[in-house]
Length: 142
Image 1 (tube, rainbow, N blue to C red):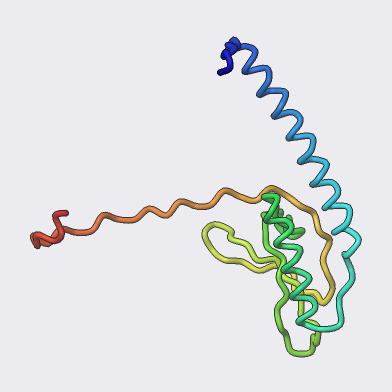
Image 2 (cartoon, rainbow, N blue to C red):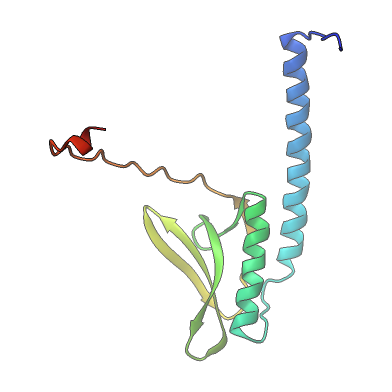
């Protein structure tokens, strides 16, 4: 059996501050590495719609795993980079899919990957459910 060692609240706080500082440094390094590599893709495209869709899915999965999104170059909102089919664009067009003022919005539409800047993923909106109306039915009272 081990004897427990007590620490002071000040020591615990200092340890957590140091840990937060280290985690923030590592996260910043990750963001910069991602930004640097994705920045090299700007102005380019793959040959087919499917290849471009696979690419942006991988980009999204990578960013999402780190709590990040693409920053829309038009409006600055966090967005998901997607590729959509469009007549005359065999490899599709790159669009930024995001919500502005509660409305789904798409910016972009060029045939090459836009400049990719990254930003934090926004917090999820909370959906408030209205309570069920009571009908007087005993099953509704539970």
